Image 1 (cartoon, rainbow, N blue to C red):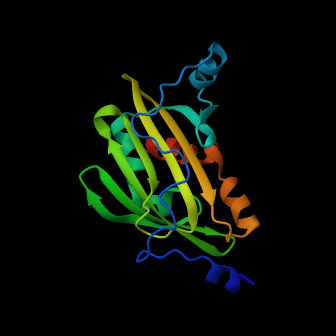
Image 2: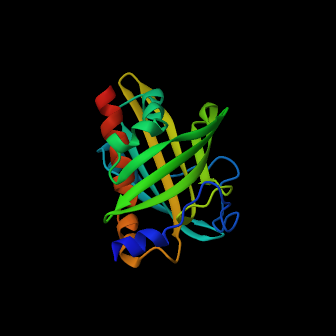
Length: 205
């Protein structure tokens, strides 16, 4: 059965994706977030704050946390795609296949229940404005139907080093991906997706 499922996944770097996006992409800086007193207290206590954002294609979750590191350190981890297999659970292969200025094209392979889910991401990094957005690279066929998201890293203080991390991702999984694989990808969750950044950034100092 696993062989049949593996054959169903059809990522292909030599073929275009079936469409050019079904999720509303970010066309500029993500909206500025505001926090209640309770949410601010959570951030100050080192906890993750989860918010919901409405866009044309539906609801989108956002995870926010404070990290005891400078933005440069945090960005060095987020954009170190070749080392994602060492830092990020379920990522078995990762690396840039094209870099044009601050446009980063990256191949990801997730290992989920013994299967490889392969997809191609087009990142647009704005280091001067503290954010990075992405969509699929629609010139290549991915196993994901679509993916849109952003990272934002804003400085809070330099002494001691403290920064605020924001992360949001909206994923649509292709209909031919089995339900149990979709569930396992979804369970990665916003909290898990940001915890590795905190761990690796604070470890780096």
